[in-house]
Image (tube, rainbow, N blue to C red; front, side, top):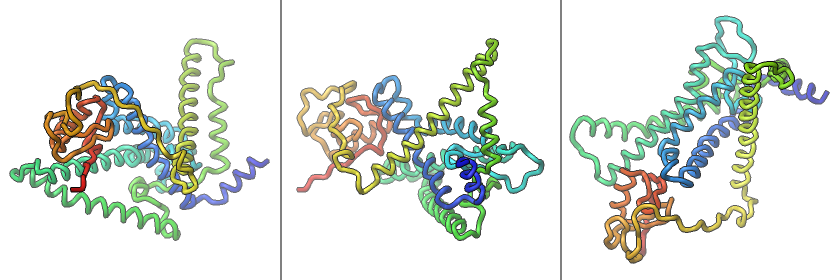
Length: 342
């Protein structure tokens, strides 16, 4: 009876609240750095074997996101984050009748682009902008040729494009809050899709699909056993992902809360990294492990803690993408300049 009452309460408002849509957007923005952090831990555990995980973390997450969104769009008519908050996607202009909790092929492709391809392209453009900006500051770019003109145009235009997109997203949020728009995001408008809460009939369909899964008692042959294995593994993975998403948001709230004890937030001092590349024996505390001379413009590499000349480590990390002493995967974003008062 209580479950039926909950369904009635949910159905009473077909339009999701702003808290629902913001929460599901926040979940996807949290999932990306969480997966990349796992890849970073794996890469640092064995840099020689798994160093590529950190180097291609954006591509690995894109593939992971592609499979996850495919599963939920195909089975629930929503993205992973939308399904987590009991939301579904509803097409505004459908040419033919469809089964509940399903999308047309056109809506599916547009949704995959908005959920997977668009964030990846945006992330890559942000990385390119940061790299070009760093090269310009360091004076490592030539000012001649058509490539330099394209770089100059991109450096000047991308911040404006990025700001315009953020302002447009804010406008959509405001219009959605005051009830002037069905879309809280311009990407949904592009897809021709609005969000709605799951109804009582939708829950019944989901429960019926769970009951139709092949049970172990009905397995009579090798083919049925294979189908049962695939269904159970897939169901376990999806359930684990949903539980992990819950704890992920709980941890985000816990560590951003002002009431969190500092003793819990404080990280223990890690052990000294093992040397896998250049040996530092015989060097003084003021020498650079790369040029073996007294350091100029001291710069620390955060993944290992070693200090180098800024020019030496910047060039090395850009080419090798790892720490020269420990072999840990590294990027120019992990360089920290050290300034000393004279």
